[in-house]
Length: 120
Image 1 (cartoon, rainbow, N blue to C red):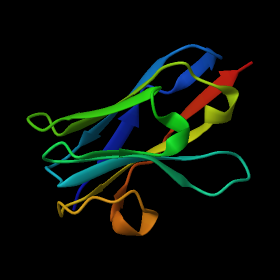
Image 2 (cartoon, rainbow, N blue to C red):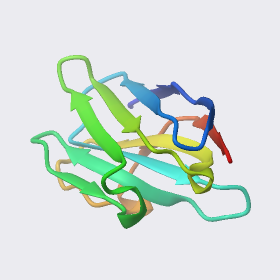
Image 3 (cartoon, one colour):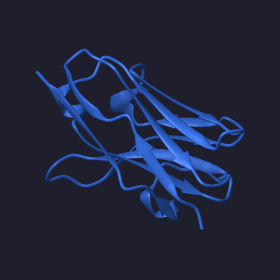
Image 4 (tube, one colour):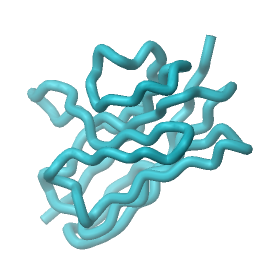
């Protein structure tokens, strides 16, 4: 089993920044951030493997940075230049294996989510 606890969500104005954190109870090979806007399907934001291979969805490239601290089993998402369309619940996800793709079906473990609201 692996437990994930997110933190760092909040409300900001467009152009602002937030940093999300996800504390994991143990090591995982691949970790990722997903988000779900009201009335929309959950989508992948960014993923990172244990050896640092990173993927981003196109809409956040150049604005968001995913990183992880393997010694602390912690995942981060630095979000800059936030837009109203970034609003939603942000979920941390993990899988024990190292194969890392930004697909919901790949991830076995999920956090409860942290809410991000960006106002215009």
